[in-house]
Image (tube, rainbow, N blue to C red; front, side, top):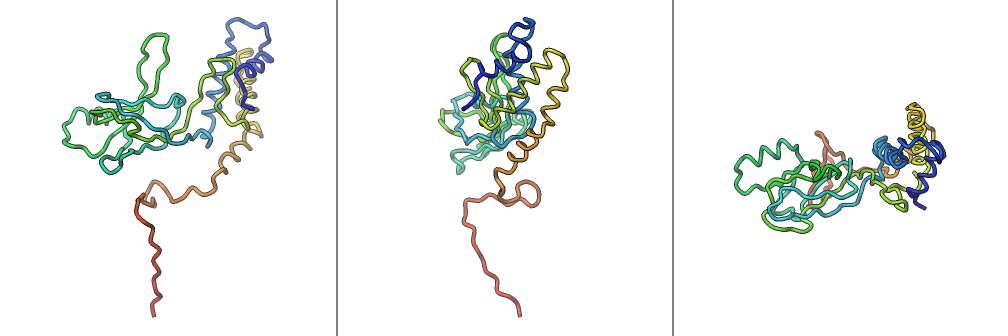
Length: 238
């Protein structure tokens, strides 16, 4: 069963005490532990299934999933690959292309960005800047694969967005961050990172998929194609 914020609060107060310094924020301890768990290793379970991204007419960006957070883009593709393709690039390149005049571009160029706060009390939100700016609404125009970030637990019954096999590691991190708040000694957190169980979880996570397919990137990359893979037989010489 997935672990909830209430259960994690109990783990934190085991360390800082039910009655603790009011400057210690138990909720912040949990959030710090969760974000640290996601950043300590490129866990395979952070990879999410492809999700559609919608174009809005005359809007130069698209909204990323709520759990993107400090995630990572794995790939972006167009729903219609015949008319347009898509290329990830940098924000400066997107801005440069916006300042030029290109007739009938065949590519969309995209780059992640974090929108400014709408108010001083609101959080920053991740989005994908797009060039050229879509001129019409297109639901599911793009498909995104990504590695998710930590989702804040804003309610006592909200559960962590991790596999249940990692609940124990999250609990240990919550305890370690609680100990840090109490003693200002970061060695508690470092110890969990080198914990034998943590090392075994990293090894197990990396072995979930034994075959990753053709080589991607570099001179040895196998080109992606929608054509058939022919099996030719070559007769021997002599």
